Image (cartoon, rainbow, N blue to C red; front, top):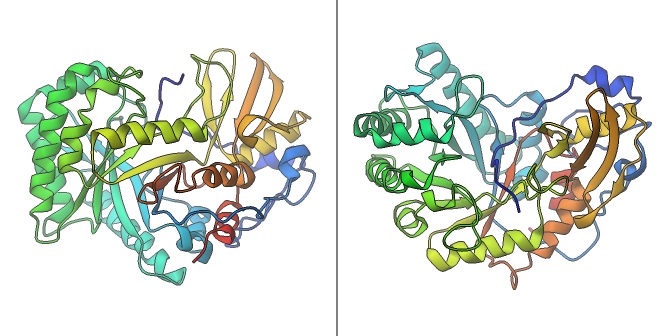
Length: 393
């Protein structure tokens, strides 16, 4: 059973690797583009747009960083994406130990304000209403390295630090020089159960301030996909779901990384597991809920596991002449050899994620539960057009 990373820091290899492997892709605004040549096996499969219609669900995309690149922005501006997605989360705000929230310099905040507006307007360019944009608070340093649980817990235990964060976020989201976002998402990882009370108090304080702002700002939280109480996950009991659900606008159940180093190589998402996690959360709270699906894959090596994009996974398979096949859940998997030993890759594509979403018919997963697509830019380029083609308008 997974130990939950929640976020995948993708290591995107240069396009040169893909070219060296004999694969080439058109990265234009057409989100339906497929690998063009020299791909192999499962990477050349048709997206499988046929099948039962997918239930309409509230859709959110998470970008693991502040500044989506041109390809990601083109994806957001595609009508197919706007058909199934209404909100974008930019995971980029960083809490500091002195109570400040980075970025703190004026130039960086001006650029972030511009990006928020650009993402909102991408929804209009796609032929719909503006996207809602949420700014995500991740407990990492500026290089993206996650703080350990003890450090985060100590910061939450300090009332002055908590108060500083709440005040800084209130200013950034609703003050006279706000960044223009519609919501805030709290992404708190790897914390011990002892942070439970402090995390709850902080969320209550922040929600009270942002909900009372002249322009009401929503407060959402990433929560672990626990299946029981006491939790089956290391950080699960740090989250008082009933209390958090009473003040938060949405709880996002982060059903990612089903397989990890503790389990050995395997799929990133299993539909039945996600359903059980959502059902357990629903028994604890009536708050709006989401479940998560990965847009990235995982490369399981001898000593480390790292996130990979669909395009990198395809390039690696081609460069290593590794024949990809379909595994459990229909995800693509293959084995290749590197200087440090044997690696196993698992990655989802339009076909496998379509199968996952198709398994979530409303009798299994309530129609009110949304979907979080995690890892903008890492997806199979045909994903959103394939899903839109199966989703009734």
